[in-house]
Length: 140
Image (cartoon, rainbow, N blue to C red):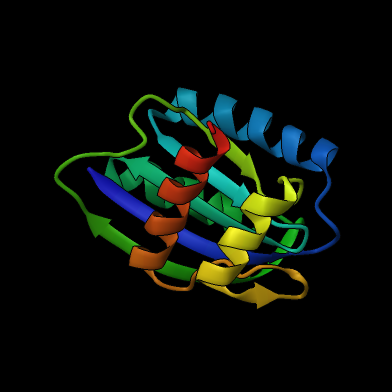
């Protein structure tokens, strides 16, 4: 199994409708390609995690790289992993652009601020940490 993480800048402002559309399409595509993953979004940036067989992840990322809804794609990691951490999700989404103020403040303090939003990490450890924090904290 392989895990790919990338960060990109949105071509426009990310709102709930855009985010829902991306999640729906990604979920359908991932199911048909045997992939799992998660997508985090601020108002200006995406952070996506994909897991699955090498060829499927690679092909999907190549398609994603051509998507005009984002630019400045930064591949954070593409590595073989023992176990997936997104096994139960074809595509899970976390819109971290509409959090409650306390949660947003906590995440900004931990990860920093970029363009007024939570700064999405540029390294695998930070990206996975944010995914865990949002997953855990949003359930509170």
